[in-house]
Image (cartoon, rainbow, N blue to C red; front, side, top):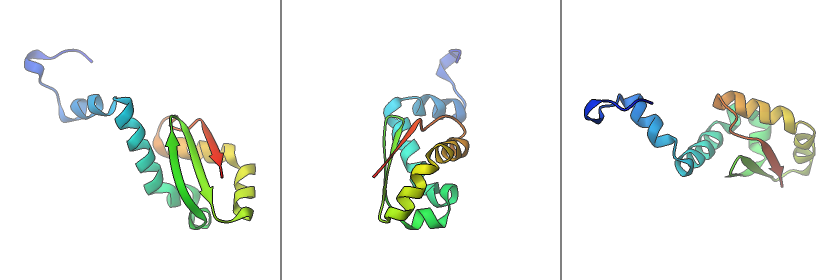
Length: 98
């Protein structure tokens, strides 16, 4: 991003600069995924999800049903793709299932 005279930026540019901080981006990624979890994965999976936590680009998902957990293990790669598609970029590289 080029430096502008008198440090004038558009609102979009200022927000992009703020979000580019890794600590803020991590928190935003986690909150967006938590908020949209039922839209991304569907109500059946969301109903049995007890927790979602991000560490770096790894998403840890906790389930209260062993059946849903086992099914999710088989479709983990598809879930990663759906999350990244919803985010618009590669936000999650791996999912840890507990």
